[in-house]
Length: 189
Image 1: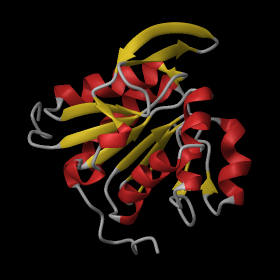
Image 2: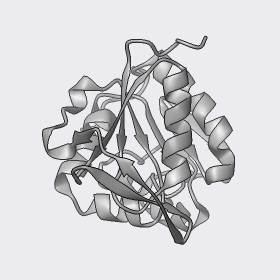
Image 3: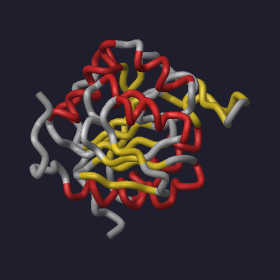
């Protein structure tokens, strides 16, 4: 099982303000499962990680968003942090990148504040999901069924609430990435 994602590439879309552990721990799990993982960002070089309210480490960027092709990736990871998804929501290229995964029904894993970007990409209507509690009204207003659970899976969409949920989140993210596209849902229009 250690190499169950061999041959699959996963994009991690993030920018400054990402909750560091929500990026680094799922990435470790993906790599341990054999996936090739690229941090994709509107920033070149590196981005600033955060540990709640404090600056953490600089995280290397593998691929500039400007040159990233979402078709090259089998799955998408959207880590949280308040600043990170708020900044990404303002970038049309970031939303277009995410929308590709929504429309192609590829697996998407979003934790904490990460699901915020899915609203703009048209990826929450009719979906059962969770997030950091402060997003529940936004997600419900966008048509999601929000629940307070450690991890929620809905046809390839994996969501979790907070860093404490990372072990369960990572297991489901790997499972859904292994399964690949979910044809049971209609493609977004």
